[in-house]
Length: 366
Image 1: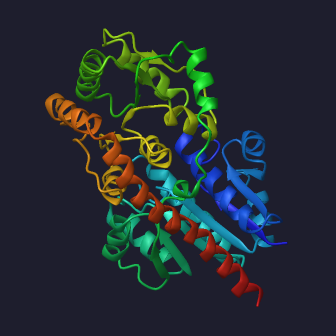
Image 2: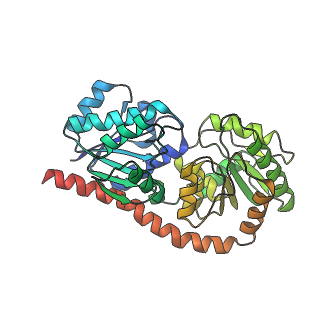
Image 3: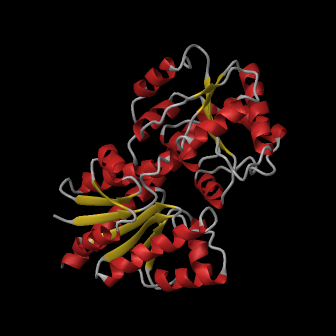
């Protein structure tokens, strides 16, 4: 039996990160049902129940060292772990876990990472030093390849794949339909999902999205549904935006599993997303999407599916957002056809991450 440790931003009730972990566990265990997976988590009890894996606390250094010593592979990823824009300390924490594994003789793989931005000469120096000691790096987009090149990280095998969530299986829509019905949000009207997040207490983008929601509800006789991707923070932000509308928008108040969120998104006719994994969920479920950017990872993902953001949180314009909504609304079939072709390639690349992980473990055993 092979032993794998997964390090990432897990156990913090972020639906995007939990979806990445769910996708990794699903794909890795599809390839080897006997694989023993241990996750380093902020909430080990929740991770054990949610993902049916072993889990240890992210500050339990003694247990982490013992587990890494017995492991065949440390997977660091997925997501944007190696950056210091949203948190300065987290970069050093994830690099410390990598260094611990290497000191204990455990192979390390960066798994579909989104690299950067990393600001500051010291942080970039540390990243270069650690990064060049890793044996295998896969990144989820070309922008991350550029970040590695700029930091002169060249020694590992580096491959551009795609986000782990692209490999997750689409789910039945009935589960989401039941949740929407429970929240009085399902019926004859088309549904438009909106995923927002708080960002530096800015208000401009909230006003633009609220105004657009009212116009969409009126022009297309649609029902507006706000989806929380990080609980409970996104609920509070959604309520703030919904309070600025006059269209009786519905804010989903509960925390949902990856499968439940995928199913809810699958029932949408269109999704407007600030959160990266709300957009990825739309791609998985074949739903037309419009992205508003707050981070290079949004732009990079949209580029991978032949899209571009309608703007960023600081300068998004109402007229441009509504124009893009109308264009998508009038060509849903065209989007779905294009999305299916592009997404099949992204799924193949996401599966490639797992294949490379097993190849790495096989080489170590030999």
